Length: 285
Image (tube, rainbow, N blue to C red; front, side, top):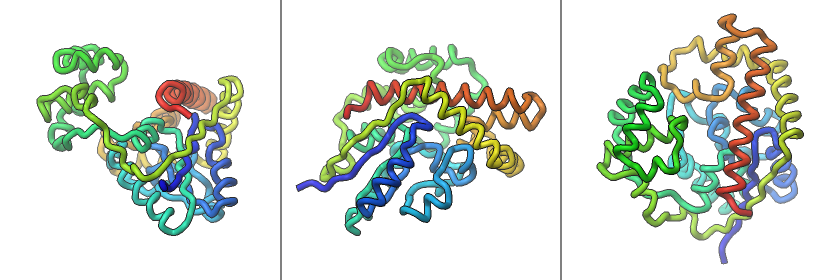
């Protein structure tokens, strides 16, 4: 008989963490993070990580444990998540996988295509090209390498475009061809109970606005200022976290405080819409 783990997912500011804590308290649970931004240790306020009180109430895993200069992706996250899920079950605790990164959850429940590791020199070369090249030019390269992938990826989705380019250059095989291969579930002996939390956008927007105000009250500006003063490489993943660029421009007097708050609200709403679309179309309850 398969063991069971629970997944609680939904858009940002939907109350996933509070629900998970309440459930974990009732069932000797452990909360395991499935949010690609909350893995980084440096920006707990900006990424809305659980509070110290939350950490003391219920065990939380895979939050604030990863270096902001290092790349995290679904394949790396799955290895950490597998270990935490298996450890929880071994200790007779209930695993609750909680987060808003839909691709991580899809990869955990359905598996990833087996793609060879991309050499770091090729990855870095493609990323450097991406900094200076126009989206249309990068998309033209991908069109030459992998026209099937272009049917599913927009020119504006630079991250996926660059991924397609680097895979072809490293392997000589289009990413779309790798993706058609049979996926291997990372935890075939575990059944996942999936719950998607959602709100209509007007209500979600209110929650986002309130959370943005709390972030500024709780010191998010100083938090971002600190990482900007440290020596991270220019392409460090931490700089891509929603709100870092906004607050940097506020610190540089390019935005007023009200403008910075408004922009962070807008970026977060856009992100929430993308999350809701992914959960509706890519994950089934």
